[in-house]
Length: 110
Image 1: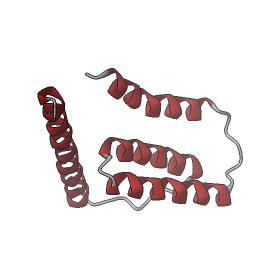
Image 2: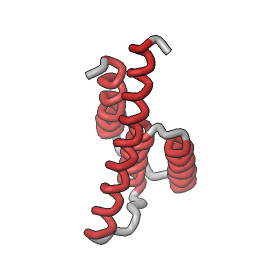
Image 3: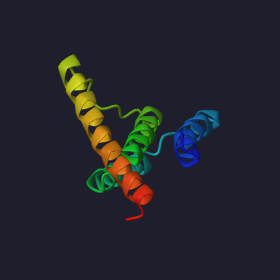
Image 4: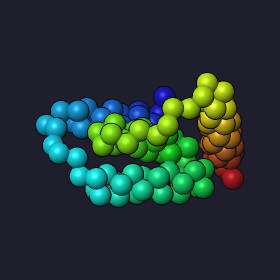
């Protein structure tokens, strides 16, 4: 696995553990909504640019914010969860295909 990818995978874990280690403060509702909106916007931008790993990391951060703020989204049905994961897998495969194409081009000297 590429060292940069390892670093990208460690970041959400560090963020999650640091968030858990912080003492529980009163929830700032306006701050929570602002943080959620910002993360959602960043997720949309990452997805539009084909950066699915970054989008997934942002989704994990959003889930942590929602847990801290107590603003969990409604529970998805089993079918909706399966469909969401299938779409995410397809998106990741597209990103992998693009990366493999770029790698082939670099190796060929194009």
